[in-house]
Image 1 (cartoon, rainbow, N blue to C red):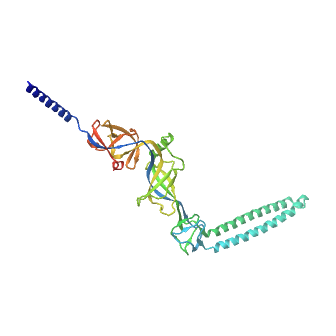
Image 2 (tube, helix red, strand yellow):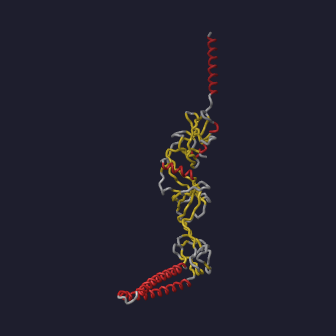
Length: 379
């Protein structure tokens, strides 16, 4: 009997062990996945936009009188100050015109003096009817005509002096002067279309960037309803990246204005920023990328782009860890920010987002989360 009891107990233990082993084989194994724990934060909105540099001021120098260039008083490529003499046009003809205008003004003043004296002598005579009314009226009219002739002669003299001043061609603005298209001995005319040279002011310098019209409208609406904060008129800062070198420009600019119309071809709006350019690094016409700071969003999340997936309809989602299992979360994405997506809805503080191993899992699958550094998660 004792042997029978021992045999039955042994069989029972073997059966229990087999059932436990079978149960363990039926439970799925937890899949190791890499996760990043996210916390809500205040994220600055930085829009990167393509653009080009534009001269702050540019002046084409053209002659305003006819004549032969006698002197060129600048070095091509040098910096010139406003008011500095650039060219000298032959003045002989214009000096003679000033002398002639002065002589004509003197003659007309003499005529006016004579007519005024005649009218003055007739004033007492007309009262005693010693002269006819017609004679007196003629004297008054002659004096008025003489005054008008003096005014016309004075205007002619002023015009002659202006033309004489135009023979000295000066710089209207300060800046870098270009090459001279005319040299000494060249004939220039008042209405010619060809310029003598060009002056360009490079410090400061404008940068024109473009932004999608729809995106700009959304940002303005978000600012108005308070979702985007930290935007002050005239205080929007802009950083610059030079396309040719990929280097960041060392000076920070300020946004000046945005156009009030949308380009019909591209659907974009032009934004203009002004940058200091003391070293002359930026030249007009260079391709650049402007990074415009357009406020900040509060309670937002930066999710590595590799963690976000898209459905056929374009909606975004990500896998997170909940109670050791995979759960799917629908995301509201504001925009891309470097190697991350800026997410404004769908996540909460402390959530573990799966960034590695998403191809081996699905909703409800058990996982073994393994923390991944944020820098590696973005790679």
